[in-house]
Amino acid sequence: MVLDSSRDALLQRVWEGGRIDAQEALALYSLPLSELGTLADRRRRLARGRALAGRGAETVSYIVDRNVNYTNVCNVYCKFCAFWRTEKDADSYVITLDELDRKIEETLALGGTQMLMQGGHHPKLTKQWYLDLLHHVRSKFPGFNVHGFSPSEFVAFSEFFNEPVETVLRDFVSAGLGSLPGGGGEILVDRVRQRIAPLKANTAQWMGVMDVAHKLGLASSATMMFGHVETVEERIEHLEVVRAQQDVSLGRLVAAGKLPADAPPSEWSAGYAQALEQGQLNGGAFTAFIAWTFQPENTVLKATT
Image 1 (tube, rainbow, N blue to C red):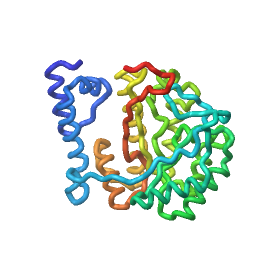
Image 2: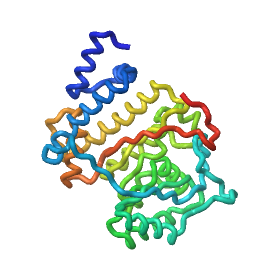
Image 3: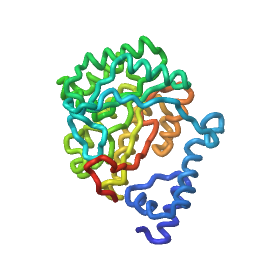
Image 4: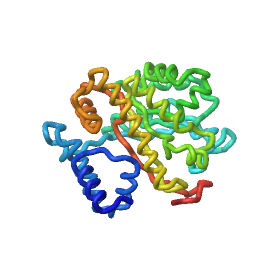
């Protein structure tokens, strides 16, 4: 814990938009929620104030989409998951194109523009099955975005298809993949991942997929699932890992002349958001961070912190 004088200096730096390190983040974690919320709102206003002709801080955006799980067959058996099945289970499934069409049509009828499509790591679905699915959606529903396939799925695809992740990603994008969700992130600390999902992609593999996706110009999200076996320090480490990759991805855009070179790293995310809004970029970095609480019902992982 920081001393009072250091605490005041830390709070002032956060208020002014400065960066913090892991120990400082840990100190902030102990603040009353109301104080932390005030600081978070201040940072939001600093980041968004210049967007949308100065209306960014007062503007909230949203997207209408639908979750589509294309299969529940999975061979990684995560301890926190109540969704996975084996092929032998009576309620296992693989989605049909007719079912997929119906779900998309229902989404469009409600004003939806995108689907989040993820599934289990099914070892028997071929690469062509996925490419045919993406081609089908793009040809039948042009303009409808497929926000699909998590990094852990791409690690599995690389193993199943015996191809590099970049090759698989490029082929999926060519077939119609529009952006990448952050599923499978859980906690990006390998001690935790070994306890809750030992057969799943490790931290370096998960983030490696994101790095390739960003190099290819894709937008993606990052996630966290918390409230199980992780410590507070590991939650902070997870945030550090995500921020480090965002620095790399945004730095790549700066070097390519797609973001202002004279802005400090603390302002890169704001510049990236503005470039997306103005149509100057379609992706190349994380666009959102989503945190989920662990729900222990029907799982073998019961421990919570």
